[in-house]
Amino acid sequence: MRILALITARGGSKRAPGKNIRQLGSRPLIAWSIDIVKDIPYICDILVSTDDLTIATVAGNAGALVPWLRPAELATDTAASVDVCLHALDWYEGHSGKIDGLLLLQPTSPFRSRNTVLRGIELFRAGKHRPVIGVCPAKSHPMWCFRIEGESLRPFMNTVKVELRSQDLPAAYMVNGAFYLISPDDLRNLHSFITDDALPLVIDEPQECIDIDSEWDWKMAELICSLSDVDPG
Image (cartoon, rainbow, N blue to C red; front, side, top):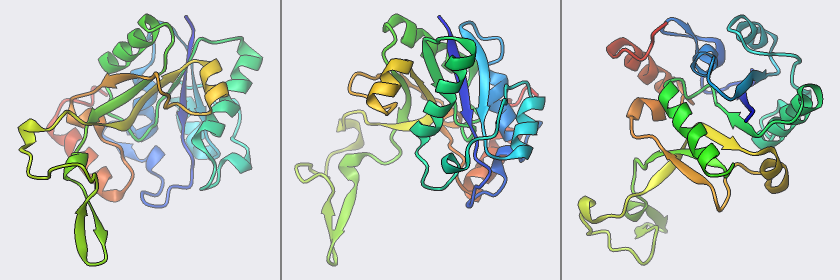
């Protein structure tokens, strides 16, 4: 089985400028996602898709394959992530042969563990290449969410009794952005990583579920680094 690890890292972050190459602990943010999949069985290459020369240089120095800069039309705020992935997939298979799976690793999830990646790959293998998506327990249960109508609060789910105790609520999960693994055929045919038959990779460790999208998230990531052993260097 051949799996291509793909890391997508655009240069134009607005809420946390330059985050992909900012130093988090002992290394740049993007290096965390590169390092975690090095020497994993089935990973045939670690490819970085970026439009930024500095990111490309940092990623290359960290050991990733960075054969080109992403086309301008795939580097805008409105460019779809799946189109970025398909561009990288088509290029790689055209130059290095067919693969069985595309593993998307967003650099904004630096604390995913090697064990989590291995569990996801095993789910993909055992599930005969069904898509696998990383999820974590929802921070706010949908049964306790509201919408505003005029000046009033209304339950977001109309059939729900908001008086339910937390222990009586069914488990709810959210996609955390840490792990997406799909076959090339499914990605091309469905144009999405999230499919009806996707298998959940449940990630319970809170630090693995962090998704750095703002300066507040960055401060939380720095705190995690300072208080734990998540950074082996």
